[in-house]
Image (cartoon, rainbow, N blue to C red; front, side, top):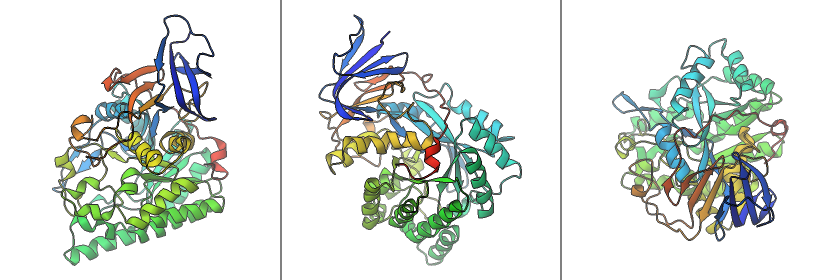
Length: 475
């Protein structure tokens, strides 16, 4: 029984772009046909998406919901929960997000997972998954638990090579423990997702700038600098190459040096994938000097024009495979609460505009094909993170997760029109299209800007990464 048909003349499928009917039943795409090629029962809803762009629902592989947010006075609050962020996501055409479970915030990994699920189940308007995050000195029994969790569908493990700021000691995992985790990943077909900066360089620069009286956040790029990214990326990659079967996903690549390290490793056949963030690709360290310049920041730091050029080139040569947000949804007051290099709030409220913003920047401004754009905002994340072809594709058998972009809606982004924070770093930017329809597993959850979904709609997604992703870079 066909529940819903979406008819479009610009439908992006794995085979190309064309005019198709998408036939949906029971939350799944059952067929992609020529328009009118398959008769549908009388009374079936047919949504006319001609003149619009039909793509798979967006996948954001890097978000933080209901997340610990330290303040400059030593106190801490929590960022907005999935209840808020997931609704913003579906308004913006994103149907799946991947957050984090801190593995050591429980009696064991299983307990930590169960506690984190309480934050999401019944609180999400979109589908979701969790990266496991390991931090600091690892308990001796943790690697075995990580292996069990990978087998249970938690296919990715986040590792820090730095404490990020002097006040966050306990984040960094030392290289001996990283070596042990890589062996677990290789044995269980898990993926290492890495926050990679050289801690010695970062902490040296904190001390240096503070001693010199240059502790204002506008100097952040000197602390979280391009040398740090270069040294750390190459060290992590070298370690991974010594553990056969290890695959890496380098999170929030911000510098040309990081892109180069990924590119060179891929040419050697190393299975490594790169993620950047929209703010790294579109804002620079000069933006820190603007009024309320903290709104543009996330860790590591914004860089310079040469880094922009490398990041954009990386989206074309395979070094950068995904554009994520590093979502931290908080108020403007929280975002501005720190003004020093060692207390500025990281992350950004960006999950809602991401899909439209990247369409504008990639397709409308830079002439990217629709397929490459879809790869960068959806399909590649699905493949790398173990969701494909269930997610990230408009194909028979895939979940009916669909975003329809309307190129006639060329709105200017305003915080007051969005659904997450009371500010946006994208204020005043004109879009070349905006989502007019979002479908999650066959259910229309946003239509014409009206939320029709429920916080019970989102489901946790079991993930298994395809074997081919571990043998050589596949994207």
